[in-house]
Picture 1 (spheres, rainbow, N blue to C red):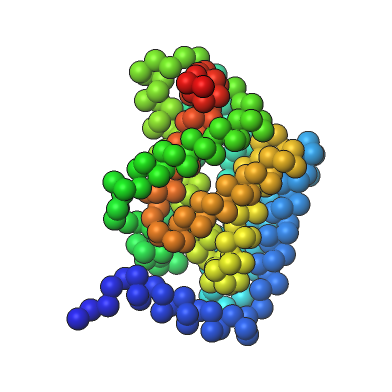
Picture 2 (cartoon, rainbow, N blue to C red):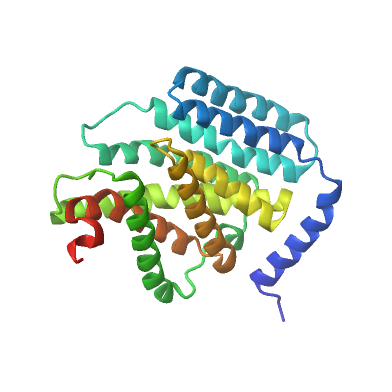
Length: 277
């Protein structure tokens, strides 16, 4: 009888953890720190320095991976390179539309190319990526509930404006497609499927989850307040925990997308509680 993919993945995790004691994680820690500093500079409005630091990280890390021998460190560094790339695309992408919603499309769609290349180069398995639709019907109400609760709490913290003028059928379809299949899917592929998986291979499950959540929090904070960064980090921790327990990318991508649909469309136009309370 052939072992299933989940048991094989668990055995690989145990093998990877047994090698962690002799592994130098300094290059990964330094890269995480530099990315965090660049994001702090961005939040403080020092954008020129932030952009230069992100570019420095991309160049130095790409060169350093040639000299490093430990493939787990190389994989983690390559995963981390997606973050400055995401920020630089976000910052420099020309505005092709006056409507804010469509900017997400132009920012996130190009990221499928480096994501695909990393997945192929590092030979990610479907289990590692979370490409499973098991129990997806059961997960749908969970995604809806968690997404609404997170969005309501985040709206209380940051009071976002709507990305569409009204809730016409056309606008709802646009918001759903972009927030789920562009923003939610891309960010969850980057942060959960790729980055969390690789950082867990370097630091272990708990520390890898925490570091990934911190990076998600600081990069998801558009307003730069301490409360928002902490809240976004907690959201990252929740999504990361959900992913580690279910190994389901569809679950976390859908939950992430629903958070954005509620936060940037339904709640601003209908009010907190979606006008029910």
